[in-house]
Structure formats: structure tokens, C-alpha cells
Length: 340
Image (cartoon, rainbow, N blue to C red; front, side):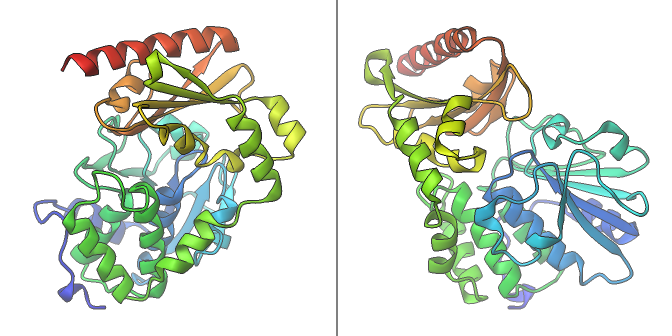
């Protein structure tokens, strides 16, 4: 599908600084945040594919945690290197960070960035503007939607692989088009991706219906930890190191578990606390809001960030210390939300 027939979501965004930097660069590396999700991976695969059209450039991809199993069906996923320091023949002169709110969230050794221009493309309102070039716009439903607009600005066309990757990005970050971010323009973009070859049923099956048996056991174990607090307005689930060992599951198997807690009638904030798989003594905390609560602001009070209805942070301390700290923040957020 020609870019001439595509309508950008936001016509007032100036992509020229990004386009000029990409044209100047000889070696471009694409990366996304630790424990990447569908938006980060989908954006990365789509951008890799369209950059391949520029010619006379070395394009590579490197994520600290590689590509989650459920996204390995996307074209180019097998080209992603993993680890906290890229093994490359020569240093990149341009690094593009996708869907990442802060440089530290990339999980890469600081030496990796030396001498390279860093482009930050993201849609999180809490983004720390860590790039040399920052394309950050919280109006977008997903970073994948930003890549869609970038493609149009570059006057490139959609193909099956780009459309599929972008559809995966948008599907997952809009909660299957259920969140408030799924505006009419987002649905029109989805239609354009489908017209270009994306198959909604295929993407949905790959992302949501490939759960492993160990993942099912983790889901059962996690739901058994369910606690309801704040007079029914918050729901809490937990994942411990012992649960990983007993079920044989890994961190990828925890994806989506928090949504079960949010789905409970009357719950405004859902919380998932899990042990950090990399840093001993640290905990990953995820938040999901339903209607009135701004969990992005909630996460911000704890040193994290995210969106109004989806956010997270990382905390250190004992389990009881972290739980007490998060409980206080959640209760305060619910109290403020109810008074507004």
C-alpha cells in the first residue's frame, strides 16, 4: 500500500530530524526496553524492515532480553542480539530506542552509547527525554503508531511484514482495541494495516493463544495469591521466585496476569508484584487502572512511570517493605481519585 493513500494520525509532528539522522548514519542499531512487550518488539521489527530500504547502511537490532517467545513469529525477530552489551564488528553511529521511558530501562552498558547519536521514540508521558533527538508524544496509542506516521513521512509503503509488526504493536498496547486510546483514527489505522496484509486472527493467536503448560500453572499459582484491598477498589497478585521454581515458568509467563485482577468488578487499580529476575532484592511492580485512577502518576511517585491506565516501577527492599510502600501509594491514589 502506497504511503500516498495513508493518513497520518498526527500531521503536526515533524519527523525530519529523525529522518535526516537516519540518512546520515552508516550503522544503525534498534533497541527497546528490558522485558520487551508487543509494542516495543513490533515497532522494532517494522522499523528494521523499512530502514532496509535505505540502502548502503548496516542495520542491526539488540535488546538486553532478546525477543519474547510470543513475538518470534514476526519477520526479523531472529536477527535480534541479546545481552547487556552488543557484540558488533564496529560501533554504531546511531542508536534508536523504541518505546522506552528512560535510558536505564534499556539495560545496556553505558559504554555502548559512547560516540553514537541516540534517538528516543516513545509515547509515554513520563518519558525522561534521554535522547539527543527526542520524538516523544503521549497522544499516540502506541510507539507502533509513531512508526506508522514515520513511514508515511518517509514516503515508504506498507507491506505484509511491516503491517503485521505494527498491528501486533497496536493490538497489544491498546488492550485489543479496548482502551480509551483506541480512537476512531486508531481503528482507521488498524484497517489500513489489515488492507496491507496484516491478519488479525493470526496475530491474536500467536500473541494470546500460545501459552505453555508451565505458563498455565503459573497463572493458577498467581491467582491463588489474589488479595482485595481498599474496600474492593484494589486487587493484588504476586509472583515469587519459589513460584517460578515450582511451576517451571519464567518471567514471560507472567505477561497478562495482572489483567485478571483488573477485570474484577469494582476494582479500580490492579497491582502485580514479582521478584526481579536480574537484580536480587528488587521487585517489579506493575499497575493497571480501570476508570478514574491515574496509575501513571501513581508509578511516578514510586520512581517509575507509564500511562494513565498502565504503568510500573522497580523497588528494592524486603517483600514486606515493598508491599507496605506500594499499599500506601495505591490507597492515596484511590483517595485522591475519588475526591476529584
